[in-house]
Image (cartoon, rainbow, N blue to C red; front, side, top):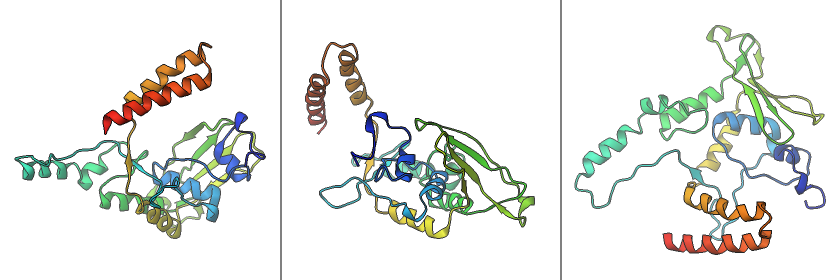
Amino acid sequence: SEAQFDWENQTNAMLAVMQGQALGLANGVNSFTDVERMFAILGDNLVFKGYPRESGSSGSALQMQGTVAMGSKSAHKDGVWRFISSLLTAERAAANPNTQWSFPANQAEFDKLAEIAMTDYHEGDEPTTVTYNTYGGSSWSDGRSFPENSGKPVIAKSTIEFENSGLPVIEVFALKRADFDKFVNFLNTISTTTEIDLKLSEMIAAELEPFFAGQKSAQQVLDLVQSKVDIYVNEQR
């Protein structure tokens, strides 16, 4: 709440939620590793909620790394679809070096990564260490598991530490099936996609310069940005 949380001196947003200073936070989920860590931090208190929408539908959105489309008037739809299909194979998804930062569109590869997330680490494996600094930034070392350690006692897959918080280190174990189902059920409610509009971002950044130079007040810049954004958005319709 406003009385509990000092927004002018915000440190780590997740830490604020953990300590009861904030009701929630806007966050992106880029991989099963993110899902594991969020459940490890918040446990059964974790709820996936999007922004309120008048339609009542999910207020969350999917952000694509890349998109392809077929023209409705294409004279070669069969060939175009064969090309698009070739981009969506499990083999193509497995070769993507960005699976640590994204979910694959191919269902078989998605299921494969889910099984990895739900697989325990054992003694002899190398856990990942994650450290969040005071301002929410993080650093980590990658972990590794080895088949020969299967059958040994289970250990945490990674550990999370919040610097200068006084909190104990959090151990992250394999994702539970119930938590996986909770996440996937939420994922299946999302029907909206979003993308970063670089032109819009550049437009806003350019208008902020007079504010930082002390030439215009925040309200003047806000009014100008709002006006230009309204014009730009209307032109795109």
